[in-house]
Amino acid sequence: MVLELQLTKEQFTNQTQTGIDFFDNLVTKLIKSGPPKIGLNVLMGKTTKPKLANLLSHLKVGKLELISGVYKAI
Image (cartoon, rainbow, N blue to C red; front, side):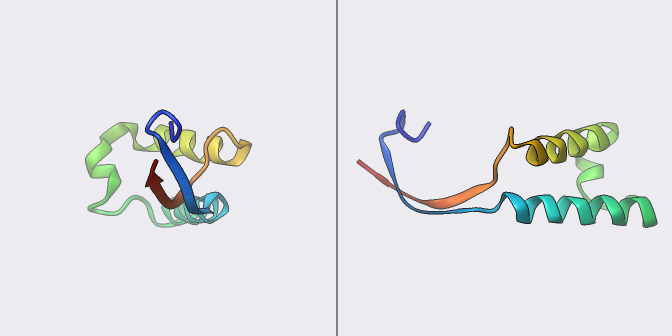
């Protein structure tokens, strides 16, 4: 996608492990305390659980990465 948009990567940080840790902690809290009164569960409804499970699964097996960075137009 970066090449399609004609961008060069100036600086980037792979935050995948941070994301995995965040979602692992979120799942632990949800199991312990249940869903919050307001949060993603309100927005996504009944599909929240499978969506978060899918997200976490794909992060853990390397099919999805969380990358932040600065890109410059060529």
